[in-house]
Amino acid sequence: MESDGIALGSRGGLRDRLALYGAQCSVFFRGFLEHPRMVGSIIPSSRFTVRSMLAPVDWGSCRLFVEYGPGIGTFCRPVLEKLRGDGMLIVIDTNPIYIEYLQKTIRDKRFRAVLGSAADVEQIVRDHGFDHADYVLSGLPFSTLPAGVAPAIAAATHRVLRPGGAFLVYQFTAACREYMRPHFARIDAGFEWLNILPCKLFWGWKTADEGEPVAA
Image 1: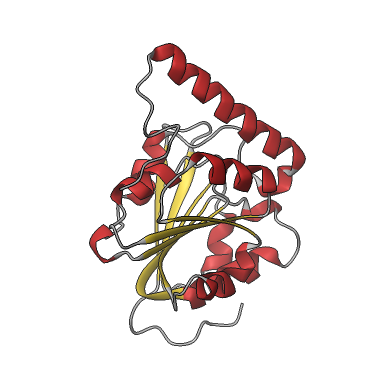
Image 2 (image 1 turned 120 degrees about the vertical axis):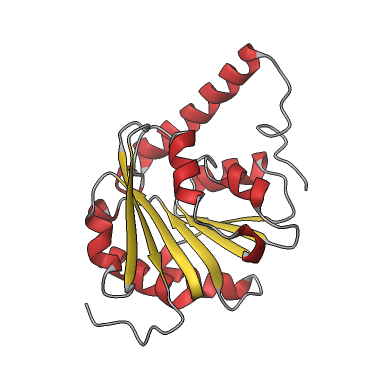
């Protein structure tokens, strides 16, 4: 696997790691200031949230993993560490600051950073040669998205997922569940205290016997 030239390949001491973390937080905070309604937090998710959120993923069967709102790549690196060699990670963000940062710092042939809307995930997935995604992860703040965007994202995500796939969502509120419920018959929930702030976790599963989504 080709690794991230900055984060994964760094062998420096504590000073280097702190400098890297400071640079990442600076980029993250700048993106928040410019697009506050599209960023869920001014602080990246903790490693505990990452571990809990990704725990149900069957990496052996995952060929395409999609993430909405990747920020500075807090989830990207753990996903790439676990993703199979012939898999792909596509991240989608409307903020060019984050997309440019990720394109410069993550050097992995399985990684694609796309400037665009999560509501267009179906076209983006097709543009990269796939019919469906296995898992879709989102940290987008559903409660503050512009009108109509959250339901459009939830519906498009359900359509793009393969049967057996899942929509993984972490939030500070439970607002996302209201948008997921019309499309996902099974939604598992959790909570992660070891995060700033503590956050709610949701996994919406697209079961093999699901019919068409119920109208919202």
